[in-house]
Amino acid sequence: YWVCGYANRQHELMHEIGCALQDSSFYKALQVADGILLILDPEAKPFSRIWCDYELYAAITDSAKDLDLVTATHSANGHVAMMLSKNFLPQESAVAKSVRERNFPISFLLRGLHVRLEDGEATVTE
Image 1: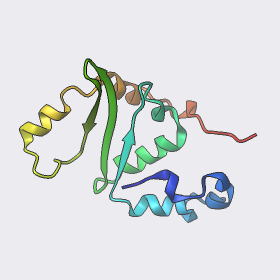
Image 2: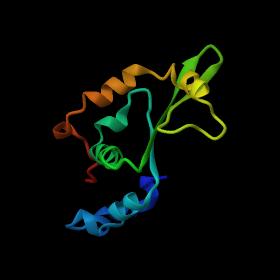
Image 3: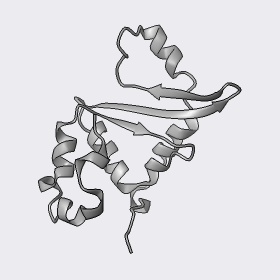
Image 4: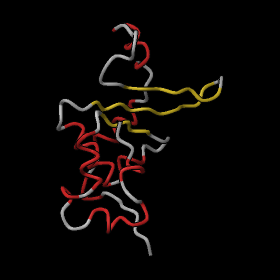
């Protein structure tokens, strides 16, 4: 799976990415990854991050890549992990997958559907 933090040196991105994105370790690692795991916080902040949006684009435009979404919500018993996955988990039936995914917060998905790429944020080091 794709983990952006390990694909390049986060504090030297200009050296890593350079002028042509296709020549960067970032792009090359993303191309060979089998899938992308998108971890959503309570504000679904990754949808507002331009690099996260690019990673999502790479996943949804390549039908061979898996895209799984995870988050945690509060419940009476503490935090509960929730996951939407492209494929079944090992030993999982269609019914079990449906049960696992039925309580995933739709509001998080709506935030992703309403993304405006021109409003995408990026960290700028001063």
